[in-house]
Length: 364
Image (cartoon, rainbow, N blue to C red; front, side):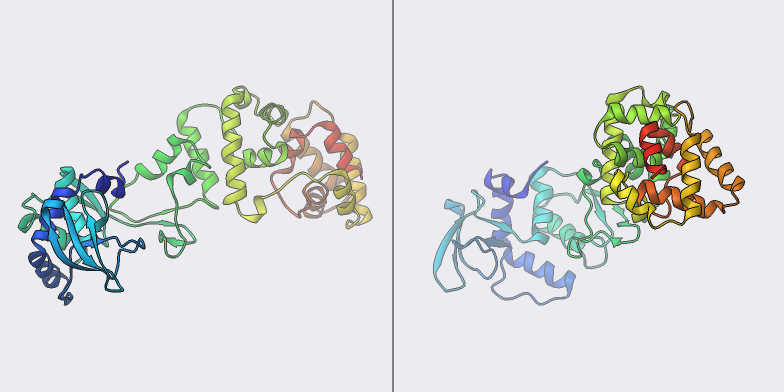
């Protein structure tokens, strides 16, 4: 990665800065013609940095090419000097775009559509490159904006910013490539990192051809067992996902992604944690006698060999046998386990717990 201030300090921009200063009048004329704005008489393509560190409000007085410097007056009228071969200032951003092409030998550069609009930065840079720096205009490709679904277009001023490192906290590099690079950049794209994200992750895992745990279930497990991949593997084996849980190193990464997504992007309904016994007892106090009796009967029917579907059958059939509406029955289950009225599919979730964990909470 090339950083602008490093390039100035290393002298990479020295010659193009000198060219820009020597052709101040021509650059000023191009800016006025393309942007239809009157530029100040004292306008300079170079912005010297004052002793205070400020780059704006300075007035260039003289170019000293032998010293690769400019003399300038600061806001208070005091004269200083700035050496442009040492990074003691920078070119204005429109001029810098054209200068950078020449300094770095750029032959192709993609741009967002706002830069390529009429009177935009590419219009001024194209003319500056041809007429002042005598460098061929690089090829280009115009791309659309990327937005965050439900939040709007990317905008640093509005705080809507998503960096690659943010994406790598919730998905592996291969998924990032599929999500971003597998699309036509000329078409608008809204990244869905909230409600639609679990479906995307399942599609990605399915394409790899490897055994996988549905992302919503992985999120549940990650929030239940924390950062212990061995405990997660046991939980998944009990829930019927033993094949996908064999590689604990890979599972540790999957838990990392799921846990971060739950904390940073998941809807409130998917953020959960297993209640401790005291919390379960408090939650059970809010249930009626019929619901508590249902939970005690379910607790007595559970055994260690049951998988998720078997537990689901017990939950449903017991409610029907007792004449309890399934909606009220399952609400009671979620209340004593998670402190919520709804949650992930109850059977696989309970099957993933140890028998003691499940029975203790269902029999409070």
